[in-house]
Amino acid sequence: MALPATLSSPALSTLSTYVSTSRSRLQSLYSDIHRQKHSNPSSFHAHVDWWHRTLKDIISRGWQGSDGSDGTSNKLVLGARRALVDRLRYEGVGKPLGLGTTIAEMRRSNDLIPLSQFLTSLHSVYDPGWLPYRIASFVVGKPLWWAMEQLDIVRSEDSYTEAEMWKKIEGDYVMLGLVVQAADTLETLRDGAGISPADNLYTLEEFRREFGANVLPGVVLSETDTKVLIKYLERERRVLVQDGDIIKFVTTDHDREITVVDRGVLELKTAVRNLRDQVDNIQNKIDQTTSKISDALRQQRKSIALAELRFKKHLEDLLSKRLGSLHNLESTLISVETAAGDVKIMKTYESSTATLKAILSHPSLQRDKIEETMDALAASTADAREIDDAIRMSGDVDAVDTGIDDTELEAELNALVEEAEKERIEAVEQAVLEKLHGLAVHIPVGAPVQGEAASRRIAEAA
Image 1: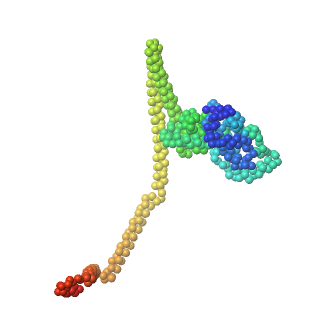
Image 2: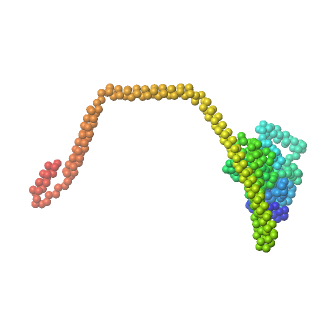
Image 3: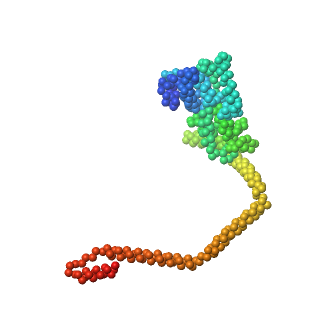
């Protein structure tokens, strides 16, 4: 969908930045702000941030027009040209008068990177540069530049008009935030892939066909976008290497080379893919021919039906041959991948063997050293046993020297038990007597004898 270059742009109104912004705020954002960087820095940076999000959204939707090298719209690269100002005209607000200054500030903050610089630089976009050089630039360069500005030898950026600023910044720029987003998505798609060598190898066209429509929602990357993404994955993420038209995903720094085996595997993989496309194409033609035969028979056009039937037979014969070739190529590819896998396994075995040899060659694991260590251990164990026996014998001697007889100890213990039991019985009897003394005796009138007898029983019980 191309962004309509009309006075009223319904497409712009659907962007999240426009939906959440009032008309008065839009008028401020569309105004010229090139002198606010020092006079009102907070407002200036808020302005730049809003346009950063807006341009990022516009680029990712493919609304720049046919600016790509292949005639499609770039989704990772901004075409910073004066025509963009007209495309961003908004009804009731007008054109963005400070867009050139905004793009210049985004370039300074590395949110936008010149396309040619991005594709050719050997250094990462996150590399801050050589520290002594940066210190010298700050200590010497800044004051020198300020002095030159005061002498009118050079011009301050604040002195440039919007038109002059556009002449300085016009060109193509990589939108770094979108590249990072696309790279994250691609790595997620690749998570768990790459089981066989062929899964890690692509031509440039195959790479674009595989990932171009999947890394950003609802759009397909242009040829330029694909080159930008590959460069970022190779230089910043270090997850692939590229050699001409060949791309290889890697997992370790030791595998960052495209070998003759890789080229052979990729050729086989490409041949298999092409044959599969041919088989699908032939099958579609057979289906179409079958449909034509049925239509001719319904129309009583037997000669046409017979001609189509002959053509169908030729197609079926060609399909059979192509399927045979496809089977042979797939078998060959599997054999090559198996052999390549065996080579890696053998390298692992060799590495493991070397590691084991290095461990076994340690002086502590030599036979003489082992025997010496085991003999020392046995001697230490014997010494410990002798010390333990000596301690035990000393304890037995101490027990004999005290003259304590176990029989006497047992008799004394039984006597203590009997004494404790006797004391317990006496305590129970004493408690019973106290209860009996506490009983109140009632003697009825006319029965003195019984009363006296009861008194005697109580006295006897006491």
